[in-house]
Every structure is written in structure tokens, then in C-alpha cells.
Image (cartoon, rainbow, N blue to C red; front, side, top):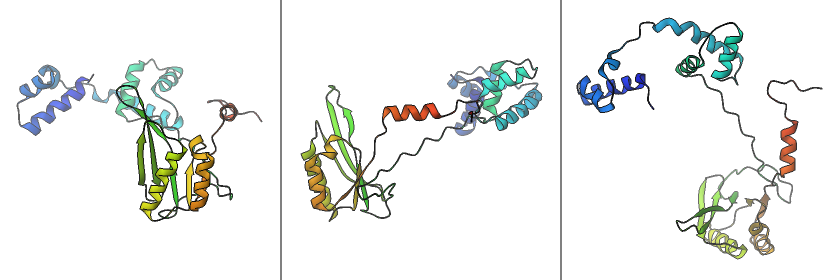
Length: 235
């Protein structure tokens, strides 16, 4: 739902853009004309509170309006949480998103780790993407991408794909590009680590980069080692 203030802005925009009367603009967006003409009498009453909220946001970057309300009440101020939320939004205060951990780019048998593409046809990557049709039957997509140019080298879709299909698609991509890349990156899916695929890749002169999957136990252990918010890790 849109509040009265946003509707006032919309009505004013309609008046200016379409050159219509205020009455007509209010009818279109269902805004009472008395509300449209209303002007607040205490516009400066929230200025001091806005300053306090900006200071709280600077001192506590992970705080939201609820925590800000709690801190203000702890300081002895009697304040409504909805008022804090309204001013918090007006000031554009937001909790910054946490940065996701960068995933490993994989390693090859020759010990190459975190290899980044430096030119076209240096590193290709491929993986399966799944979808389904309206009747519920599965679709299996295999996109092959050049990591340097972000170009889609090949894209195939079938109801099912096996190792022989992966070889067929790769072979067609190599012929079309005039030769194989130096490396090809993938996870440890059964279609990618099959012996037939490995033999074909070796004959073509590829080198493989496999992304090591993180085990569930390792992921849980890493999370348990992280300190809880608001607590200082004990030495």
C-alpha cells in the first residue's frame, strides 16, 4: 500500500506531466483532495530525532530501526517504534548487506589454484542447469561459457544428458571455435568426471580445473568457529 505522502507526489507528477487539474489527478489515484492539500504544521519536530538516528547508524552499522528504538528508550526517551521506522526510512538509513564469501575457482592436477582467465579461450566453464516444462518433465541445460569474454560458447538442452552427450557438445564447441581452450572448469559431477569424458579431454589437450565441493560437516564447523554477534571471542 502507498501512503498519503507518496500519493501527493504522484498527483503532483500527473498534474505536471499530463497537464490535468488537481481534481482529476486525485480521482485517478484515489486521493482525497483534502489530503492532497494538507501541509504538516510541525515539519521540524523530527529534526533532532533524525540526528540521533544518524549517529546511532554510524556507531552501530549493523543496527536497524528496532535496535535504534531500543537504544533510544534505554537512554530515557519515550518514543514509538513506528515513528522511528518512518524517520529511519526518510533518512535513507539501511543495514549494509553482508558480503558473500568468494568461492574457490578450483585447482588442476598441475597445482594451478584460483586460476583466472587472462584471454579468450584461456578458461571455459560448464555446469548443468535444470528446469521443467508445464507437464512437470525435467529439462537439463548445459551452457559452456568463456570466462574471459563471458561469451556463451555453446548451449544445449535435453530431457537427459550423459557423459557421451557432454563429449558431443564439447566436440562441437571445439570445432566451431577452431580449437580447445587451455583449461575447462567444472564441479565434480558424475558426467564431468566420467572416464570417457576424461579420456576425450586428455586427447584434445584440455587441462581440467575442478571446484572442490565443501562438505556439510566442514561448512558447519566453519560456522561454529565464527563468533556470535555482540560477543567478544575468548582467547
